[in-house]
Amino acid sequence: MMIPRGQTIRAIVSFALLAFSAAPATGARAPALADAAGNYRIASSSVIHFSIAQVGGGGGIAGNFAKFSGGFRLDPDNIGRSSVEFTLYPESVRSSERRIENFLRSSAVFDTANYKTVTFRSTSVTQTGPDTATVEGTLTARGKARKERFAVTLTDWNRRSISFTIRGSIRRSPYGIDVGTPIYSNVVEFDMNIRGLRR
Image (cartoon, rainbow, N blue to C red; front, side, top):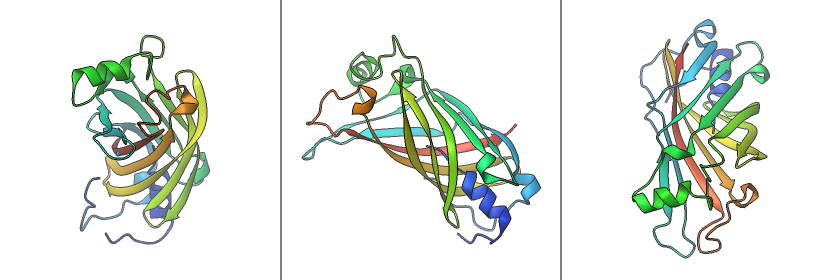
């Protein structure tokens, strides 16, 4: 993917965050800074996928979330003032089998009877390459909040939307979700394809 240099792409890429991969656009014109700046909502067509490996091989556990919401603001003048808010609804978790879904909703994992959401609020965005960035922020799950980091890659853009991939590795035991260890990994891998629509 050929990406022009300069402040326009720095601003877009650095904020193209949080946080599971579409093919890069070809022949697309990079938006002007004034076009890219603004507020976006996260589209329902986005994909939030996660997986937990089984130690020593095996199938592990994988799934996605059918319901989520959030948005982000792109500040053209000061990347540090850009921000993102993201909410997952664990009750909407989907997996390969109903019994796995019920287990994930149970008190052993997401405990959806007591905790309705998992949230992420960004605290910083740092460019790491011409089309990549790192987003740090506070992830809150089961009433516990921790600082987490996600790697972001810009994949597509136009005047109405921005798309990117987000990957992150989250240790689950600090959130009180250590069931199944050490048979199952303590690390949850997130792999997300996110599309933001201009508000």
